[in-house]
Image 1 (cartoon, helix red, strand yellow):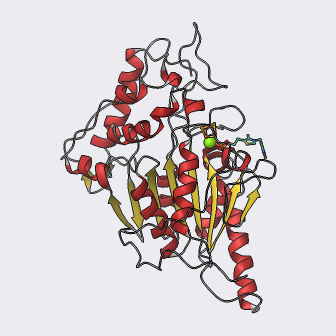
Image 2 (cartoon, helix red, strand yellow):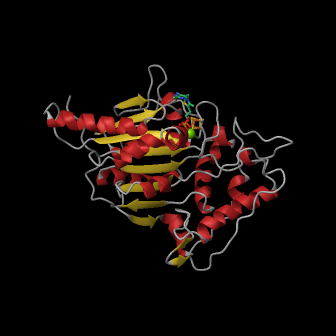
Image 3 (tube, helix red, strand yellow):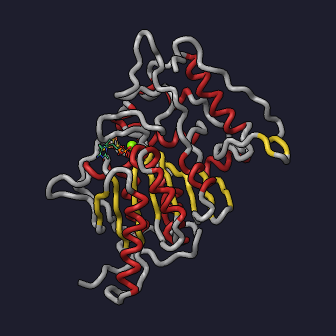
Length: 353
Ligand SMILES: Cc1ncc(C[n+]2csc(CCOP(=O)(O)OP(=O)(O)O)c2C)c(N)n1
Ligand code: SF4
Ligand SMILES: [Mg+2]
């Protein structure tokens, strides 16, 4: 069978997307929850990757809900890989392709390799494999981490990327202990970027900003590898809100400065869209309460908890030298001007760690 026509021509690295193909490569046939933004991320990712793409994905919602018996939304070659092994599966797939091409068993052509994982399988369990993949400069590969902020598929357990204070199956709120999740969210894209100078492209995106997300996926694929993109995806089941609000919540997280749209191409850090306007001071961040108060997982928050959350977000915007990206407030070259904030501890009932 001849390969389907490439629907997006090869782009120069880092070009803005102006034309999108009509074709979908993640289609109907999945069983994700109504309003699942991670499913939308898969659709965006597949659309801009095009048909000459191999995808692997770790155990989780985007595996289980997309592989019901005799039914799948994938119109691309797709394979499941074990929870925690996105990085190794990306390297293995890219290495196998290269070997087949070298031996002349398949034509030597560009084939995208994408391995996806979520916060549990990538940000916690599989971090070591992501690290190994991002050190391996022999292959072109993209790792996409869809962050739905819990181990969603096994009924919403807290991960290292679950926001502070959120209720999950493992971190309920009770009369004695209002807050039982005490860990501040792990910043995986910055962690990977800071520690892997061999990585060519790192990006933080949001399901609420589809064009930005697709441009980031496309940039990653065009620059080659190794590359990493993370997306922030509201999950109605895990976060406890009406599915109609999914997209709005993703956008709100950016408006409040909780999700930061940034990327780093070959060592050059940039901000995008609304985030960029916030960094430039052209747009003010909304209060985090606007985002938190719309979700059942934060319904137990007292005003003090909101204040604590707001102070942490303010700190990362106002005191960090790279706002919202890396917690560096002071260097031998000096602090950020106007900094000097101290973040309060959560108050009675909110701090039982
Ligand atoms: C090694 C291993 N441990 C535990 C499990 C059980 N398990 C399957 S899916 C899953 C949740 C994964 O969470 P995440 O990676 O965040 O993906 P999500 O479900 O949120 O899409 C778990 C714990 C497993 N499949 N393999
Ligand atoms: S639990 Fe969340 S991530 Fe999983 S399919 Fe439902 S909405 Fe999507
Ligand atoms: Mg998850």
